[in-house]
Structure formats: C-alpha cells, structure tokens
Length: 233
Image (tube, one colour):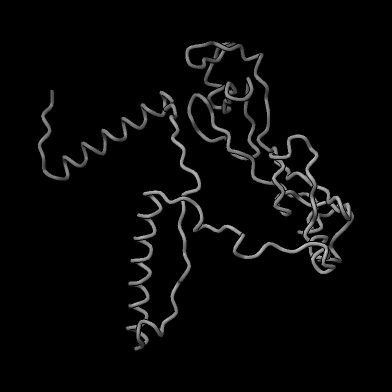
C-alpha cells in the first residue's frame, strides 16, 4: 500500500478519489428508473425537481410536457446525462497535516458547521498514547449496541434470531455426535433499531393503472384456477 500511495492519497485507505454511487433518478411521469449513463431531461431543484426519461419526453408531441396537470415548456428543461459521481469529502489532521477521507477517519463533517473542530488522525493519536500525553478511554466507557434503547421490533427480531440459532446449534451437535455445550455458538449478538421513518409516497397515475390491471388479471386467474365461475355482465 505504501508503494501505491502518493501525496494526494488518503493516508488511511491509500485511495485518491473515493466515489459513491449517486442516488437513483426516477422519471416523474412513468416512475421508471433512469439508467446509468442514460440521457434525460430535468427541471427545478430539491423537492420541486422533476425528471423525464427520453420515451416520456418524446411521447409529449407538443412544445410542453405536463406535470400534475401543469404544462411546462420543453425549452425550460435541461438535458443531462446520468453520469454524476459523489466524491467523499476530506479532513486534515491538525497535528501532522495529513489528509484523509472523512468516512475513513470517522469524522462527522455535518456536525462541524463552523469548520473549527479539531481533528487528530489515528496515527498521531497512537503516538500521543505511546508518549503518555493522553490515555485511551476504558472499554467500559465505550458504548455498544446493547446500550441503545430497545423497541418492540428489535425484541421480536432478537427472540426469533436466538431461537433459530439455538435450533441450528442443536442440529450441529446432533450431527457431530456432541453435546450442546461442546458445539460453538454465536454469542453476543445484539439487535437494535437505528432508524424507523414513516413516509408517505405518491403513486404515479400511470403506475397505478398498470398495477390495478395486473392485480385484476391475477384475481381473475385465481378464480379460474379454483374453478369459480365468472359471470359476464
């Protein structure tokens, strides 16, 4: 890794440019996901941003395209290519002045609103411990998953998981001809709910029409398969 590093590399992962998959883009009229490196049209920004795939754009024969009953001139749409990349931000150590990716350094840049937060990289921190300039936190002071609040959902998942792991351990013990305690098991597993958000999403009219038609076809097929007679009206 040292031979592949340069002055522009992250001192922790040895990678210069760390990119992430951008958030998916969906066509507003049809709801289809716009493929990577595909061309599309867009208008607006933030919550009012709308995107249009090429088929939906060409389907609108006029000089305008409708969004929720509002006609928008096509001349206001920007043509783009879905090839944008999100690059990870950097943070500089205040001691050795080395640069690292924020995600590699576990540095929360969102909480550093003023830009004045002090950062010490892991290498400088270890050197300070060796020189006796600072002491590491005791293991008891480091909070773990078990210290997070419990919920009904995580209790249910834990009970099901522990029950299944116990049964799997019993099966292995029986196959190996050993007692339950002689077979290694998975200990120390903790389940916690970190995020639970209620969202209300709007179903596009075109997708709703397709979904209803498919559900109706499946319903009729189930009736015919079960031998139920369908009366024609």
